[in-house]
Length: 454
Image 1 (tube, rainbow, N blue to C red):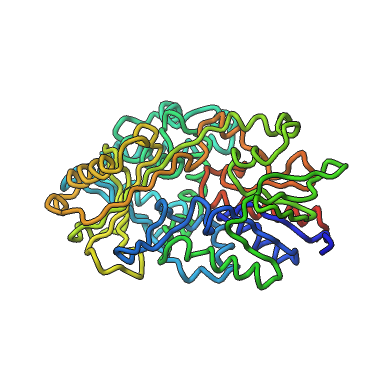
Image 2: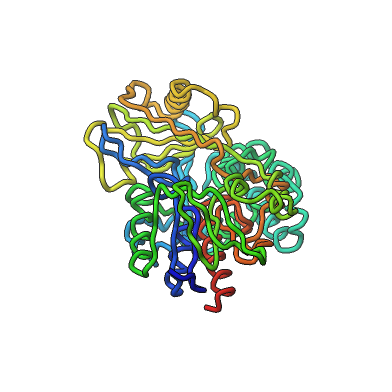
Protein backbone atom coordinates (compact mmCIF):
# COMPACT_ATOMS: atom_id res chain seq x y z
CA UNK A 1 0.00 0.00 0.00
CA UNK A 2 1.38 3.40 -0.98
CA UNK A 3 2.29 5.83 1.78
CA UNK A 4 -0.03 8.84 1.96
CA UNK A 5 0.51 12.20 3.60
CA UNK A 6 -1.97 11.27 6.32
CA UNK A 7 -0.29 8.02 7.36
CA UNK A 8 1.13 8.30 10.89
CA UNK A 9 2.95 5.76 13.06
CA UNK A 10 2.71 6.31 16.83
CA UNK A 11 5.23 4.34 18.89
CA UNK A 12 3.91 3.71 22.40
CA UNK A 13 0.43 2.88 23.66
CA UNK A 14 0.24 4.74 26.96
CA UNK A 15 -1.72 7.90 27.71
CA UNK A 16 0.51 10.04 25.46
CA UNK A 17 0.51 7.70 22.46
CA UNK A 18 -3.22 6.94 22.61
CA UNK A 19 -4.11 10.62 23.11
CA UNK A 20 -2.02 11.48 20.02
CA UNK A 21 -3.57 8.62 18.07
CA UNK A 22 -7.15 9.57 18.97
CA UNK A 23 -6.60 13.27 18.15
CA UNK A 24 -5.02 12.38 14.80
CA UNK A 25 -7.77 9.89 13.95
CA UNK A 26 -10.37 12.58 14.57
CA UNK A 27 -8.47 14.87 12.19
CA UNK A 28 -8.70 12.29 9.40
CA UNK A 29 -5.26 10.71 9.68
CA UNK A 30 -4.70 6.97 9.26
CA UNK A 31 -2.94 5.97 12.47
CA UNK A 32 -0.97 2.90 13.49
CA UNK A 33 -0.23 2.75 17.22
CA UNK A 34 2.54 0.25 18.05
CA UNK A 35 2.95 -0.95 21.64
CA UNK A 36 5.80 -3.33 22.53
CA UNK A 37 4.12 -4.81 25.63
CA UNK A 38 1.31 -7.39 25.62
CA UNK A 39 -1.15 -4.74 26.78
CA UNK A 40 -1.75 -1.01 26.36
CA UNK A 41 -1.27 1.57 29.08
CA UNK A 42 2.47 2.20 29.37
CA UNK A 43 3.23 3.12 32.97
CA UNK A 44 -0.47 3.74 33.71
CA UNK A 45 -2.11 0.36 33.41
CA UNK A 46 -4.10 -2.06 35.54
CA UNK A 47 -4.87 -5.76 35.73
CA UNK A 48 -7.39 -7.95 37.52
CA UNK A 49 -5.88 -9.97 40.36
CA UNK A 50 -7.10 -13.52 39.70
CA UNK A 51 -7.10 -14.47 43.38
CA UNK A 52 -9.28 -11.61 44.67
CA UNK A 53 -11.05 -10.39 41.52
CA UNK A 54 -9.99 -6.80 42.31
CA UNK A 55 -8.53 -4.26 39.89
CA UNK A 56 -4.88 -3.51 40.63
CA UNK A 57 -3.34 -0.31 39.23
CA UNK A 58 0.42 -0.40 38.68
CA UNK A 59 0.51 2.84 40.69
CA UNK A 60 -2.24 4.88 42.25
CA UNK A 61 -3.17 7.76 39.94
CA UNK A 62 -5.52 10.58 40.92
CA UNK A 63 -6.85 13.05 38.37
CA UNK A 64 -7.99 16.57 39.18
CA UNK A 65 -10.51 18.96 37.72
CA UNK A 66 -7.64 20.99 36.28
CA UNK A 67 -6.63 18.05 34.06
CA UNK A 68 -8.36 19.70 31.12
CA UNK A 69 -6.46 17.83 28.39
CA UNK A 70 -7.05 14.47 30.07
CA UNK A 71 -10.77 15.13 30.53
CA UNK A 72 -10.98 16.24 26.88
CA UNK A 73 -9.35 12.97 25.82
CA UNK A 74 -11.70 10.88 27.98
CA UNK A 75 -14.66 12.81 26.56
CA UNK A 76 -13.47 12.02 23.01
CA UNK A 77 -13.38 8.29 23.68
CA UNK A 78 -16.63 8.24 25.68
CA UNK A 79 -15.03 7.30 29.00
CA UNK A 80 -15.89 10.28 31.19
CA UNK A 81 -18.76 8.38 32.82
CA UNK A 82 -16.16 6.04 34.35
CA UNK A 83 -14.93 8.83 36.62
CA UNK A 84 -16.05 9.94 40.06
CA UNK A 85 -15.86 13.71 40.64
CA UNK A 86 -15.48 14.99 44.20
CA UNK A 87 -16.50 18.61 43.70
CA UNK A 88 -15.22 19.67 47.11
CA UNK A 89 -11.55 18.94 47.72
CA UNK A 90 -11.32 16.89 50.90
CA UNK A 91 -8.06 15.35 52.10
CA UNK A 92 -7.80 13.70 55.50
CA UNK A 93 -4.30 14.23 56.92
CA UNK A 94 -3.13 12.11 59.87
CA UNK A 95 -0.32 13.17 62.18
CA UNK A 96 -0.61 10.22 64.55
CA UNK A 97 -3.43 8.28 66.22
CA UNK A 98 -6.37 10.57 66.89
CA UNK A 99 -4.53 13.55 65.39
CA UNK A 100 -6.41 14.22 62.21
CA UNK A 101 -7.24 17.33 60.26
CA UNK A 102 -9.04 17.76 56.97
CA UNK A 103 -8.21 20.08 54.11
CA UNK A 104 -11.71 20.84 52.84
CA UNK A 105 -12.55 23.63 50.41
CA UNK A 106 -15.25 26.13 51.25
CA UNK A 107 -18.24 27.01 49.04
CA UNK A 108 -16.68 30.28 47.93
CA UNK A 109 -15.79 30.73 44.24
CA UNK A 110 -12.20 30.04 43.22
CA UNK A 111 -9.56 30.87 44.19
CA UNK A 112 -11.10 31.98 47.51
CA UNK A 113 -12.41 28.45 48.13
CA UNK A 114 -8.89 27.47 49.22
CA UNK A 115 -8.83 30.18 51.89
CA UNK A 116 -11.50 28.31 53.84
CA UNK A 117 -9.56 25.05 53.55
CA UNK A 118 -6.37 26.61 54.90
CA UNK A 119 -8.02 28.62 57.65
CA UNK A 120 -9.68 25.47 59.03
CA UNK A 121 -6.61 23.25 58.78
CA UNK A 122 -6.13 22.24 62.44
CA UNK A 123 -2.64 20.75 62.13
CA UNK A 124 -1.35 24.33 62.05
CA UNK A 125 -1.78 27.19 64.50
CA UNK A 126 -3.76 30.25 63.43
CA UNK A 127 -0.53 32.14 62.93
CA UNK A 128 0.92 29.33 60.79
CA UNK A 129 -2.27 29.20 58.69
CA UNK A 130 -2.15 32.92 57.99
CA UNK A 131 1.54 32.71 57.10
CA UNK A 132 0.71 29.77 54.83
CA UNK A 133 -1.91 31.83 52.99
CA UNK A 134 0.47 34.74 52.61
CA UNK A 135 3.12 32.35 51.34
CA UNK A 136 0.73 31.05 48.69
CA UNK A 137 -0.08 34.57 47.52
CA UNK A 138 3.62 35.48 47.36
CA UNK A 139 4.28 32.34 45.34
CA UNK A 140 1.61 33.27 42.80
CA UNK A 141 3.14 36.75 42.55
CA UNK A 142 6.57 35.22 41.92
CA UNK A 143 5.08 32.98 39.23
CA UNK A 144 3.73 36.05 37.43
CA UNK A 145 6.80 38.26 37.78
CA UNK A 146 9.90 36.08 38.08
CA UNK A 147 9.47 32.57 36.71
CA UNK A 148 13.15 32.35 35.88
CA UNK A 149 14.01 32.73 39.55
CA UNK A 150 11.56 29.98 40.47
CA UNK A 151 13.01 27.73 37.77
CA UNK A 152 16.43 27.89 39.47
CA UNK A 153 15.13 27.12 42.96
CA UNK A 154 14.20 23.95 44.79
CA UNK A 155 10.97 23.68 46.77
CA UNK A 156 12.96 23.75 50.01
CA UNK A 157 14.72 26.97 48.95
CA UNK A 158 11.33 28.41 48.04
CA UNK A 159 10.07 27.68 51.55
CA UNK A 160 12.98 29.66 52.98
CA UNK A 161 12.11 32.57 50.70
CA UNK A 162 8.43 32.44 51.68
CA UNK A 163 9.22 32.24 55.40
CA UNK A 164 7.48 28.92 55.92
CA UNK A 165 8.29 27.15 59.18
CA UNK A 166 9.03 23.49 59.84
CA UNK A 167 5.47 22.65 60.81
CA UNK A 168 3.91 24.20 57.68
CA UNK A 169 6.42 22.35 55.53
CA UNK A 170 5.81 19.02 57.24
CA UNK A 171 2.01 19.22 57.31
CA UNK A 172 1.22 21.02 54.04
CA UNK A 173 3.93 22.03 51.58
CA UNK A 174 6.05 18.88 51.49
CA UNK A 175 3.16 16.36 51.28
CA UNK A 176 1.76 18.49 48.45
CA UNK A 177 5.12 18.58 46.68
CA UNK A 178 5.61 14.82 47.02
CA UNK A 179 2.13 14.08 45.74
CA UNK A 180 2.39 16.32 42.67
CA UNK A 181 6.11 16.26 41.83
CA UNK A 182 7.04 12.77 43.06
CA UNK A 183 10.36 13.69 44.62
CA UNK A 184 12.22 15.14 47.57
CA UNK A 185 11.40 18.85 48.12
CA UNK A 186 15.14 19.45 48.56
CA UNK A 187 15.56 18.48 44.89
CA UNK A 188 12.27 19.40 43.21
CA UNK A 189 11.71 22.51 41.11
CA UNK A 190 9.87 25.41 42.72
CA UNK A 191 8.60 26.45 39.29
CA UNK A 192 6.83 23.13 38.78
CA UNK A 193 5.19 23.37 42.21
CA UNK A 194 4.02 26.90 41.41
CA UNK A 195 2.45 25.70 38.16
CA UNK A 196 0.60 22.88 39.93
CA UNK A 197 -0.68 25.21 42.64
CA UNK A 198 -1.86 27.78 40.12
CA UNK A 199 -3.79 25.26 38.03
CA UNK A 200 -5.19 23.15 40.83
CA UNK A 201 -5.81 25.53 43.73
CA UNK A 202 -5.60 29.13 42.55
CA UNK A 203 -8.00 28.93 39.62
CA UNK A 204 -11.62 27.85 39.28
CA UNK A 205 -13.24 25.95 42.13
CA UNK A 206 -13.95 23.02 39.82
CA UNK A 207 -10.23 22.72 39.02
CA UNK A 208 -9.41 21.57 42.55
CA UNK A 209 -11.87 18.65 42.44
CA UNK A 210 -10.39 15.20 42.98
CA UNK A 211 -11.31 12.77 40.23
CA UNK A 212 -11.05 8.99 40.65
CA UNK A 213 -11.55 6.23 38.12
CA UNK A 214 -14.37 3.83 39.03
CA UNK A 215 -12.50 1.09 37.18
CA UNK A 216 -8.89 0.03 36.69
CA UNK A 217 -6.73 2.38 34.66
CA UNK A 218 -6.57 0.10 31.63
CA UNK A 219 -10.35 -0.19 31.54
CA UNK A 220 -10.65 3.57 31.86
CA UNK A 221 -9.05 4.46 28.55
CA UNK A 222 -7.15 1.76 26.66
CA UNK A 223 -10.00 -0.16 25.06
CA UNK A 224 -12.09 2.90 24.25
CA UNK A 225 -9.17 4.75 22.64
CA UNK A 226 -8.19 1.70 20.62
CA UNK A 227 -11.77 1.24 19.40
CA UNK A 228 -12.00 4.87 18.24
CA UNK A 229 -8.75 4.59 16.26
CA UNK A 230 -9.96 1.32 14.75
CA UNK A 231 -13.29 2.84 13.69
CA UNK A 232 -11.39 5.66 11.97
CA UNK A 233 -9.51 3.16 9.81
CA UNK A 234 -6.38 2.90 11.92
CA UNK A 235 -4.85 0.04 13.87
CA UNK A 236 -3.57 -0.47 17.42
CA UNK A 237 -1.10 -3.35 17.77
CA UNK A 238 0.45 -4.81 20.93
CA UNK A 239 3.63 -6.93 21.02
CA UNK A 240 4.77 -4.74 18.12
CA UNK A 241 8.40 -4.07 19.02
CA UNK A 242 10.11 -1.29 17.06
CA UNK A 243 13.85 -1.87 16.64
CA UNK A 244 14.82 1.29 14.76
CA UNK A 245 14.15 3.92 12.10
CA UNK A 246 14.98 3.85 8.41
CA UNK A 247 15.82 7.24 6.86
CA UNK A 248 15.43 8.55 3.33
CA UNK A 249 18.00 10.57 1.38
CA UNK A 250 16.58 13.86 2.73
CA UNK A 251 17.14 12.84 6.37
CA UNK A 252 13.48 12.16 7.08
CA UNK A 253 12.22 8.94 8.65
CA UNK A 254 10.81 6.66 5.96
CA UNK A 255 9.81 3.66 8.08
CA UNK A 256 10.11 1.84 11.40
CA UNK A 257 11.76 -1.56 11.52
CA UNK A 258 9.93 -4.18 13.58
CA UNK A 259 11.59 -7.00 15.48
CA UNK A 260 9.51 -9.58 13.66
CA UNK A 261 11.15 -8.49 10.41
CA UNK A 262 8.38 -6.21 9.26
CA UNK A 263 8.71 -2.63 8.14
CA UNK A 264 6.03 0.05 8.41
CA UNK A 265 6.20 3.21 6.30
CA UNK A 266 4.45 6.50 7.03
CA UNK A 267 4.67 10.22 6.33
CA UNK A 268 4.99 11.20 10.00
CA UNK A 269 6.07 9.49 13.22
CA UNK A 270 5.26 10.18 16.87
CA UNK A 271 7.57 8.64 19.49
CA UNK A 272 5.60 8.32 22.73
CA UNK A 273 8.21 6.31 24.62
CA UNK A 274 10.63 7.18 27.45
CA UNK A 275 13.86 8.98 26.44
CA UNK A 276 16.14 5.97 26.96
CA UNK A 277 13.88 3.91 24.65
CA UNK A 278 13.85 6.64 22.02
CA UNK A 279 17.64 6.88 21.92
CA UNK A 280 17.89 3.15 21.21
CA UNK A 281 15.90 3.69 18.01
CA UNK A 282 18.12 6.49 16.73
CA UNK A 283 21.30 6.09 14.67
CA UNK A 284 24.51 7.25 16.37
CA UNK A 285 24.85 10.29 14.13
CA UNK A 286 21.41 11.55 15.16
CA UNK A 287 22.04 10.91 18.88
CA UNK A 288 25.09 13.20 18.69
CA UNK A 289 22.82 16.15 17.91
CA UNK A 290 22.61 18.49 20.96
CA UNK A 291 18.82 18.08 20.94
CA UNK A 292 19.22 14.41 21.90
CA UNK A 293 22.51 14.53 23.79
CA UNK A 294 20.95 16.66 26.52
CA UNK A 295 18.69 13.72 27.38
CA UNK A 296 21.63 12.53 29.49
CA UNK A 297 20.72 15.23 32.03
CA UNK A 298 17.24 13.75 32.51
CA UNK A 299 17.17 11.90 35.82
CA UNK A 300 14.30 9.68 36.92
CA UNK A 301 12.37 9.26 40.14
CA UNK A 302 10.93 5.96 41.45
CA UNK A 303 7.52 5.20 42.94
CA UNK A 304 6.55 2.22 45.09
CA UNK A 305 2.92 1.16 45.37
CA UNK A 306 1.97 -1.45 47.98
CA UNK A 307 -1.44 -3.11 47.61
CA UNK A 308 -2.74 -4.84 50.73
CA UNK A 309 -5.84 -6.97 51.24
CA UNK A 310 -6.81 -7.03 54.94
CA UNK A 311 -9.24 -9.14 56.94
CA UNK A 312 -11.23 -6.01 57.85
CA UNK A 313 -11.92 -2.42 56.82
CA UNK A 314 -9.88 0.01 58.88
CA UNK A 315 -11.01 3.39 57.50
CA UNK A 316 -14.06 4.83 55.79
CA UNK A 317 -12.06 7.56 54.07
CA UNK A 318 -11.27 7.20 50.36
CA UNK A 319 -7.99 9.13 50.50
CA UNK A 320 -5.70 9.69 53.49
CA UNK A 321 -2.34 11.41 53.84
CA UNK A 322 0.23 10.35 56.46
CA UNK A 323 2.51 12.99 57.98
CA UNK A 324 6.03 12.13 59.14
CA UNK A 325 6.09 8.50 57.95
CA UNK A 326 7.76 6.67 55.08
CA UNK A 327 4.34 5.89 53.62
CA UNK A 328 2.77 9.04 52.25
CA UNK A 329 -0.72 8.23 50.96
CA UNK A 330 -3.44 5.64 51.49
CA UNK A 331 -6.17 4.93 48.93
CA UNK A 332 -9.18 2.91 50.05
CA UNK A 333 -10.13 0.91 46.95
CA UNK A 334 -13.33 -0.32 48.57
CA UNK A 335 -14.51 3.32 48.56
CA UNK A 336 -13.24 4.10 45.04
CA UNK A 337 -13.84 1.15 42.69
CA UNK A 338 -17.42 0.28 41.80
CA UNK A 339 -16.56 -3.40 41.29
CA UNK A 340 -15.20 -5.28 44.28
CA UNK A 341 -13.58 -8.64 44.74
CA UNK A 342 -15.10 -10.95 47.32
CA UNK A 343 -12.10 -12.36 49.14
CA UNK A 344 -11.08 -9.58 51.52
CA UNK A 345 -13.14 -6.86 53.28
CA UNK A 346 -10.29 -4.35 53.14
CA UNK A 347 -8.35 -3.43 50.01
CA UNK A 348 -5.91 -0.53 50.39
CA UNK A 349 -3.16 0.92 48.20
CA UNK A 350 -0.22 2.84 49.67
CA UNK A 351 2.18 5.14 47.83
CA UNK A 352 5.81 6.01 48.51
CA UNK A 353 6.95 8.68 46.04
CA UNK A 354 10.56 9.66 45.37
CA UNK A 355 11.43 6.24 46.78
CA UNK A 356 15.15 6.08 45.94
CA UNK A 357 16.10 4.91 49.43
CA UNK A 358 13.57 2.06 49.39
CA UNK A 359 13.42 0.82 45.81
CA UNK A 360 15.82 -2.08 46.51
CA UNK A 361 14.02 -3.26 49.64
CA UNK A 362 12.44 -6.72 49.55
CA UNK A 363 8.70 -6.78 49.01
CA UNK A 364 8.06 -8.23 52.49
CA UNK A 365 10.06 -5.40 54.03
CA UNK A 366 8.04 -2.78 52.16
CA UNK A 367 4.74 -4.38 53.19
CA UNK A 368 6.00 -4.35 56.78
CA UNK A 369 6.91 -0.65 56.59
CA UNK A 370 3.47 0.21 55.27
CA UNK A 371 1.70 -1.82 57.96
CA UNK A 372 3.81 -0.23 60.71
CA UNK A 373 3.01 3.26 59.39
CA UNK A 374 -0.70 2.51 59.07
CA UNK A 375 -0.94 1.05 62.57
CA UNK A 376 0.80 4.15 63.94
CA UNK A 377 -1.76 6.38 62.25
CA UNK A 378 -5.00 4.35 62.35
CA UNK A 379 -5.74 2.56 65.64
CA UNK A 380 -8.38 0.36 63.95
CA UNK A 381 -5.60 -1.22 61.89
CA UNK A 382 -3.56 -2.48 64.84
CA UNK A 383 -5.19 -5.91 64.90
CA UNK A 384 -5.72 -6.17 61.14
CA UNK A 385 -4.14 -9.12 59.36
CA UNK A 386 -2.71 -9.12 55.84
CA UNK A 387 -4.41 -11.69 53.61
CA UNK A 388 -2.50 -10.79 50.46
CA UNK A 389 0.08 -8.25 49.32
CA UNK A 390 1.29 -7.05 45.92
CA UNK A 391 4.23 -4.64 45.70
CA UNK A 392 4.81 -2.78 42.44
CA UNK A 393 8.05 -0.87 41.95
CA UNK A 394 8.52 1.61 39.11
CA UNK A 395 12.24 2.43 39.18
CA UNK A 396 11.85 5.00 36.41
CA UNK A 397 8.28 6.06 37.18
CA UNK A 398 8.73 9.70 36.20
CA UNK A 399 11.32 12.15 35.04
CA UNK A 400 12.81 13.74 38.14
CA UNK A 401 11.45 17.24 38.77
CA UNK A 402 14.78 18.85 39.66
CA UNK A 403 15.55 22.18 37.92
CA UNK A 404 18.24 20.74 35.60
CA UNK A 405 16.07 17.84 34.42
CA UNK A 406 13.14 20.19 33.86
CA UNK A 407 15.30 22.53 31.74
CA UNK A 408 16.54 19.54 29.73
CA UNK A 409 13.11 18.28 28.72
CA UNK A 410 12.73 18.47 24.93
CA UNK A 411 10.07 20.08 22.79
CA UNK A 412 7.51 18.14 20.76
CA UNK A 413 9.17 19.17 17.48
CA UNK A 414 12.56 17.55 16.79
CA UNK A 415 15.43 18.27 14.36
CA UNK A 416 14.04 15.45 12.19
CA UNK A 417 11.33 17.01 10.06
CA UNK A 418 8.73 14.25 10.44
CA UNK A 419 9.49 13.00 13.97
CA UNK A 420 7.53 14.36 16.91
CA UNK A 421 7.76 13.51 20.62
CA UNK A 422 5.08 12.79 23.19
CA UNK A 423 5.21 11.61 26.78
CA UNK A 424 5.00 13.01 30.30
CA UNK A 425 8.75 13.78 30.04
CA UNK A 426 8.34 16.18 27.09
CA UNK A 427 8.34 19.86 28.09
CA UNK A 428 4.75 20.84 28.87
CA UNK A 429 5.37 23.19 31.79
CA UNK A 430 3.93 20.51 34.09
CA UNK A 431 5.55 17.80 36.19
CA UNK A 432 5.48 14.27 34.76
CA UNK A 433 1.80 13.48 35.31
CA UNK A 434 -1.03 11.94 33.30
CA UNK A 435 -2.05 15.47 32.34
CA UNK A 436 1.44 16.18 31.02
CA UNK A 437 1.38 12.95 29.01
CA UNK A 438 -1.99 13.68 27.42
CA UNK A 439 -1.11 17.34 26.77
CA UNK A 440 2.07 16.21 25.00
CA UNK A 441 0.08 13.74 22.90
CA UNK A 442 -2.31 16.48 21.82
CA UNK A 443 0.61 18.80 21.05
CA UNK A 444 2.26 16.11 18.91
CA UNK A 445 -1.00 15.54 17.03
CA UNK A 446 -1.31 19.29 16.38
CA UNK A 447 2.27 19.43 15.08
CA UNK A 448 1.67 16.48 12.75
CA UNK A 449 -1.55 18.08 11.51
CA UNK A 450 0.25 21.37 10.85
CA UNK A 451 2.91 19.58 8.81
CA UNK A 452 0.31 17.47 7.02
CA UNK A 453 -1.85 20.44 6.13
CA UNK A 454 -4.88 19.36 8.14
